[in-house]
Length: 143
Image (cartoon, rainbow, N blue to C red; front, side):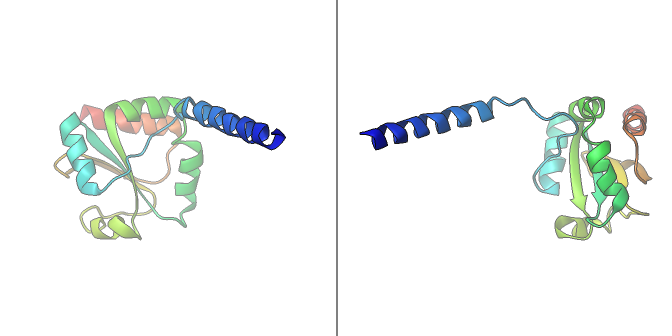
């Protein structure tokens, strides 16, 4: 009987933890789209938004710095999540290899704003601080 009570308590505790985990607030910062490039273009068209593309590589120090310092910033996330479809592509793997000819980079990271038809609106190479990312987004919005 004690064993049965222990199992019931453990099951209920596990269910409580699972329920609480789903109630966690959404992370701050840029929320990146998870899907194909074609799906990102379709989503951008459906929402009448531009795509923000972070063209990066896994070995790039400035790319890693932005991932930990700039992209998680609340103000950056609020702006980018409301105005753009945000996409990260490793330009040396997967779909990035297919798109590097269409969206050539001059260094890593290269940051693009692309309209829903796939045309580059604005492009800059190099890491950006949160303040610079906000200014860059505002410049793209004004285009």
